Amino acid sequence: MKILTLFSLFATYSSGNSINIEENAGQFFSSGHTNNWAVLVCTSRFWFNYRHVANTLSVYRSVKRLGIPDSHIVLMLADDMACNHRNPKPATVFSHKNMELNVYGDDVEVDYRGYEVTVENFLRVLTGRLPPSTPRSKRLLADDRSNILIYLTGHGGNGFLKFQDSEEISNVELADAFEQMWQKRRYNELLFIIDTCQGASMYERFYSPNLMALASSQVGEDSLSHQPDLAIGVHLMDRYTFYLLEFLEDIHPASKSNMNDLFKVCPKSQCVSTPGHRTDLFLRDPGSVLITDFFGSVRKIEITMETINLTDPIQQVELSPVNEELQIEKYSYADQLPVSEIIHQKPKQRDWHPPDGFILGLWTLILLVFFKTYGMKHLKHIF
Image 1: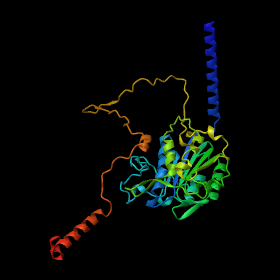
Image 2 (image 1 turned 60 degrees about the vertical axis):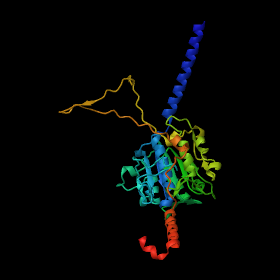
Image 3 (image 1 turned 90 degrees about the horizontal axis):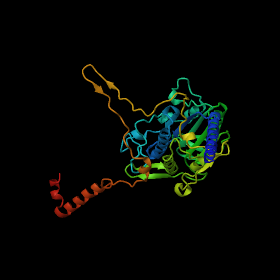
Image 4 (image 1 turned 30 degrees about the horizontal axis):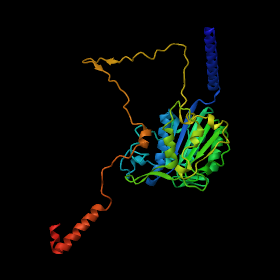
């Protein structure tokens, strides 16, 4: 009797598992989503807008870490802060005041830089209306199965975003560009994030389906900066993107966090401004949309019936030149401090440096004491 009961329980468990597997497989093959793209845009120039470049590079670093390759990222930076002559640490852009997290790195591929970052080029990238001579790296080669993340940061106002402090893109132009993308079957789902003053005004005119939008501030509110650094002399990030980056550091490719979790990033107690979001155009429930549906990658798989042994040790290849035998060195990843620990760690002690004007004031005091004691006739002994 006990054996019969155990057998019936095992049969029930097996049938339940097979039903779940079939449901998951059905969802996988019926999904219209096969690839992810990201368009990341910093629209500001000049050194005092350092934080906008750091914002964009932080999001770039996060999507690459979660698996979106450079071939599927269009990165637009309006200024090159890493090579700015005012940068005390050339070839670096930091997003944290401890100066531990360099988001510029050695593998950043900037597709549009400097004066290439214009409203016209941005709209051409979205709609695909580029000259035939445009290289592949500068194109958004998305299709009707692509999920696209679009991130914008810079200076804006009610219904517009400034580019290069010389031109603007309006919320109507942006809405029309997204509609062209939908009509031309250039996306499956689209996530729009903007970190700028009065950011919610930029998604008020959207009317295309399958589009979700987030903003760092409501109409009439400023989006505030964060992380001032005295050594660099500017703020390193904006508040909303800083807490967005902190949230993304806990996300991994198999994470089950959804869009409702993303909506809770940077409440008003942290941002000071009021972040907003719009989901009425999106066809799915945001609670069922994983963060990795936009920030991660969808990898191609190959189904095989062959048994593959992954436990056998890899044989080290040896090269035998004519004169001597040369063995290839074994390489491994160096242990790195997790970014989540970097963000929460205490600032390290820095070397003391005299404040500005201290040396000049000290020399002035010495000269005054000298003149008071010896007078002008002994001035020649100084020089």
